[in-house]
Length: 141
Image (cartoon, rainbow, N blue to C red; front, side, top):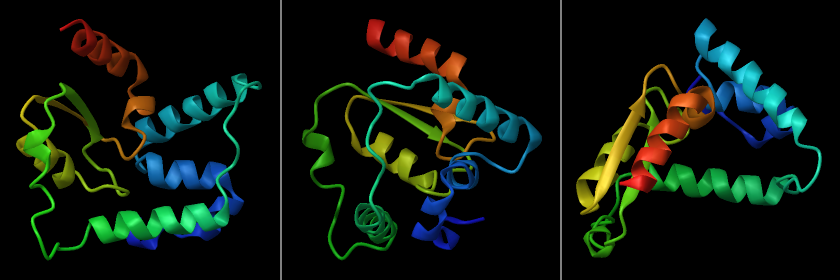
């Protein structure tokens, strides 16, 4: 599946949406996706409200627009961001294609990029243990 094939209709089945958008079709990724879903079930209090169809459609439109060729230099303001930045991305992300992570890292002056293999948009969930190690190293650094 590619990002252009995702639709707000998938909101009717949040598990299918998570599995198709956040994890790859590989057995390892699907198993990580199931583990992520089980972890989600553990949190029963203080959960975010479900995303409305209107908000999901707006998000989808904004992400698709970001993936188009810009008429102006959309990266011009990034060098002004001086905050250290950890960019975490999946090598097979279908929501935000991986080249965007490389471009972001290239244009932010103090960015560190971590690209997780065989991962889509849920890279930090699929590789949760190593992501926590990377996040701790970054925050301690």
